[in-house]
Image 1 (cartoon, rainbow, N blue to C red):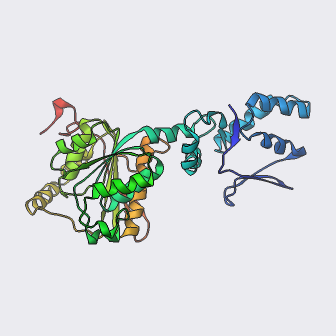
Image 2 (image 1 turned 90 degrees about the vertical axis):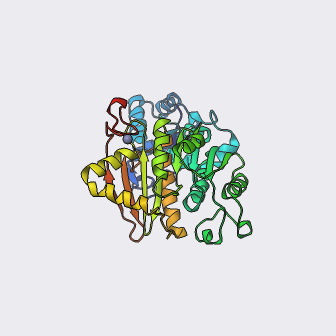
Image 3 (image 1 turned 180 degrees about the horizontal axis):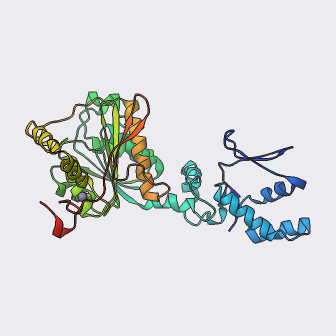
Length: 366
Ligand SMILES: [Zn+2]
């Protein structure tokens, strides 16, 4: 193990001691009596194994500092200041290290000295994901996924580009109006990140079987397709439950953005619907009425709001793929208000054993 201060953690030597971290509200002052700590910190540069650091200090100060140094390393690691440089170059080549340099700095914020930020980037590069919908939200989500370094992406859409898309769909050009969004997205995304192996499906989703076809071979699903309004979530839910895949989904509802995450065997979107119907029978009547009227939602999405929600969805997605955080929307409908930036939980649920989609077979109530 070769301890190193993270790239995001500078330290400054001042007469009163050593300040760790550049954030004026969170930096920490460390005592620097006889400049001992200054010398020790200078050795946390990723060049020395812990044993070498101990040897160098013991020789310089002619006293046994082994336990003190171990303790300091543990404390600094737990506080999030140190990483282990010894992992370097084992997983990523120089090109990847440069392209994803800031990603690696970000991931290092979530790892201690035992964690490996390079493995997190590698996991992103190697994981096969499906993005359903490359319209307003989807085209921005796709950019974020490409920036993070997802190299194996399947995208699905059936729409063609229209003039009215340009208030929020940044991936396309006006000269391409009338073209298929999937083909146009493919062209742009491959130029942006040539490492991506992008599988394109031009198809309108009309059943859960269609979703199953699209997500075949994927390990995670992100759904921002919103048509047909009342059915798409059911079809996607059925398909991800059947294939044991985590799902992040969401959409814009006028002035608010909603997002949800489901994890296999932990309850699904149908469990939530069942819970709502059990609590209030009127909801079932409302849904039936909307179905009769073939309800389709009108779009009131502006680009800035779409960007915020796209960012949130991708962060939730990143959390479940590399596990650096627990997604806030696990089994919850979360809602972000674009007018005041407040986030609130609208609803939460647990797995319903009688769920007709994910419940235990003998208990299903179809
Ligand atoms: Zn369920």
